[in-house]
Image (cartoon, rainbow, N blue to C red; front, side, top):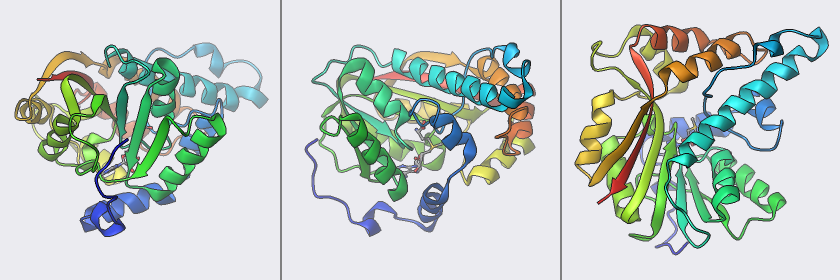
Length: 287
Ligand SMILES: C[S@@+](CC[C@H](N)C(=O)[O-])C[C@H]1O[C@@H](n2cnc3c(N)ncnc32)[C@H](O)[C@@H]1O
């Protein structure tokens, strides 16, 4: 992708908070991410959707853990496919951006599905190195590239993207600044999609369970209303809003029984069940 000057390290991480988020992801080697990614080489740092097959909990004890891990990975891959289903028509010559790209799972799936160019951005240099190595192993380095960049100031060319997304990465940034950058990058009629957890304006402010999730991940979960206000302020007009809350609960129930549970499962289940937290997909057009 054509870019303006490459941002220096200091420019990428502008605040002490961003440095702490980058440090978290640089150090992250959580089995819930690594062991699932090893199932088929697509590494995700997001949650799953859909019912799990209860038979994975039965059968031989020796292979139970692996069955659960493969099933959780299937649900996480289904989540990424759902996001890609909402990107609209994307052709092989189009450019798309994976914003807060993690180890690159959704980027590789997009390239596989559309044949398009993908630029992933993350503030973790470890993730950039990991994902670019994967692109090399897959033989797609000419089409899928990962960059140490701040999503609020990517340096990419104005109007150069057919589509862009945030897969569980909006809770680290100010939404007005984020959507201003997406609106700058997207062509007219380009599509933006996010899947995110957000707290419920109807039940009030940040619940105790939502605060525990924030603390666990060093993030700042936004209220649902903030997404629509910040999109409207930046020429992004929603075309689909899907409440995935019910569809993600089975994933968390399975994860709570899994060998890779991290301890954050109960706050997620409480927050979803008490409706103080929603798992939402929002797709919007750049006008
Ligand atoms: C929960 S992970 C999601 C990763 C990926 N989207 C996925 O679905 O597997 C959050 C990601 O956001 C990235 N991130 C957080 N703040 C960022 C920022 N200001 N600029 C770029 N990336 C950021 C982190 O480095 C991490 O890769």
